[in-house]
Amino acid sequence: MPRFLPEPPDPHSLDSDPPARGGAPIGVLMVNLGTPDTPTAGAIRRYLGEFLSDRRVIELPPWLWQPILRGAVLTLRPRKLVPRYKEIWLDEGSPLLVYSVALAQAVGKALQEGGVDARVEAGMRYGNPSIASALARLRDQGCERILVLPLYPQYASSTTGTVVDGVASCVARLRNQPELRFVKRYNTDPAYIGALASHVQQFWQKQSKPQRLLLSFHGLPRVTVEQGDPYHRDCMETAQALRQSLGDDGRLVYVTFQSRFGAQRWLEPYTLPTLKTWAGQGVTEVDVMCPGFLADCLETLEEIQVQCRDAFLSSGGARFRYLPCLNDDASWAGGMAAFVRRQMADWAA
Image 1 (cartoon, helix red, strand yellow):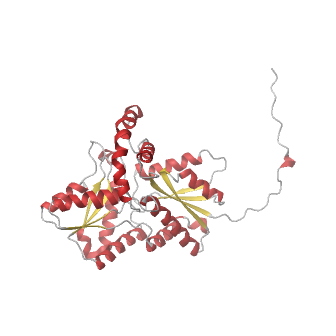
Image 2: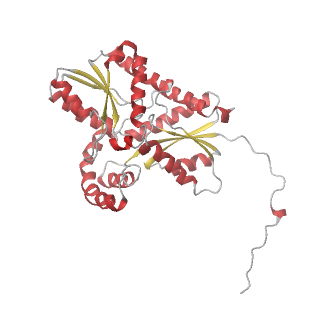
Image 3: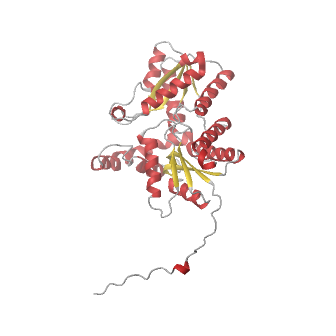
């Protein structure tokens, strides 16, 4: 049978003398982990189903993990989490989402006031607003260059790595792809460390110093670090930089890891058992902060501020204080805006 080839495009139907390109704003995509839409079993189930299906998060073969996830985990765990989420929920919604959006808005305002024509959007790796929707909003505003800023100061494959995967997956479907730049880590950036140190010092000026300041980072399975993940080193570098910034008070700083999941060995020492041990040894006053989290969430407001506090006090401790995350603190937003400007200096020139 004869083959009919499509007619070649009419060269006269296209602009042979296209108009000059106008100056396009720079996009900044700030990505956090994600959150259920509401503190209900159904919303939690949808969120966990997406989150725990990521192969960077649960590094088991799908044929082994998915029946477990779709069976016991998603059947039982969402209902157990409902009261915990309700306890931390704000009038405006999930704390993680509320603070992430507020930080993005504050960074965008600081960039504009500094003379940078930028558009900043917040997206969630899992749940809403999705990375795809945030990218679409930036592209709708004319952004052809986009800086991707994961809201994880320390790099891990299961956090920053999966943000890269998520963005790349969205862009792979586009015909006209934006130019992308990814921030890998900022665990010792002066703006970040300075904001942490100022946060601690201001808190102690209003209150008093504790016997110990515990930095609780989110944990990872130990095997992931043994296989080459730099996360543990990033956390230790953050702790060391904060100690140096606090001067003589740096001696009060200790490090633990929280949020274990499953039976395998995770990064140690573990947060809750450490607090119980300290109380038994006569440590009565402890402050805890979570520098790996930039926005308060279930792991900070419920796991630390409720579970760990109760464990410490019931084991003999007398005073437990949780220092909130940096959230949308004005000075931190300014510092992050300065960091963003450095990352895209040649774009903004």
